[in-house]
Figure: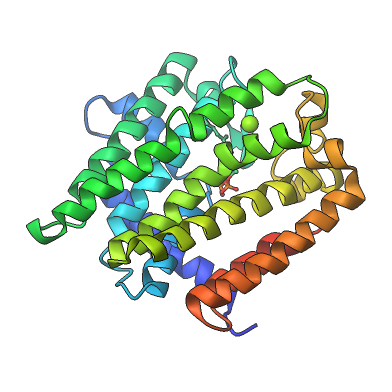
Length: 297
Ligand code: FPP
Ligand code: MG
């Protein structure tokens, strides 16, 4: 592999974490418990996949990843809101995330709802503000629009609603793909497109980056579904078999484990080709596809 992915991921994580720390109010700022809960969730051990995709795609599209650092963090704030709300008793009712108590357990349910609300709002404030300067004003406005569409009622929130509705329902391949594309693929597609948009790419190039992110989200989710069946608690940071126990539609449930693995390989192969076309041979996007597809199981 021409990219040392582990070193790259660690360096990105340091850079992104430092920027998130600058962007979020301190725990001593009123209202303290809210800011504690927001920081507890944001600094809970996430991989920073969405921000690093924004930065990698910005670079691949000819832009400067430093210029988009803050905007890339907006997606991590929005992602974190979605995880807090996903874990709530009314949704997945999870007590553990990334090996730690979920926000509504560590704090309380009302504060978890409000911390999610504040992170979502703050995410858009960051997108509206960065990159700073009048010359980027049009791109900032377009960034707000594209991210809002991705996480709104026909994107992430819609996918979450159908996920809840489909829980316990009969296996349905089309429905499953629609859920994953909306719930996970939409925000990842927004990340890759945002990088290209902020690099100044035209509509056609932006669409290619968006498609890459959406398909990457699908691969991510198929791999995650497989791991839920085959992985250990240590590998997952959560208890395995949760999806099946909750009656969720998953790839192994709908297609069987072997066919799910085959779909994962096919999608990974096509994404490797797409990554190469977007960034050249042996780049970060290709390494991320390998990493995602190669997760054991
Ligand atoms: C894991 O990401 C999370 C996902 C793949 C997203 C799943 C989508 C939802 C939970 C939608 C929730 C939406 C609402 C509106 C409640 P990751 O492996 O990148 O997590 P990390 O940040 O822990 O690394
Ligand atoms: Mg969940």
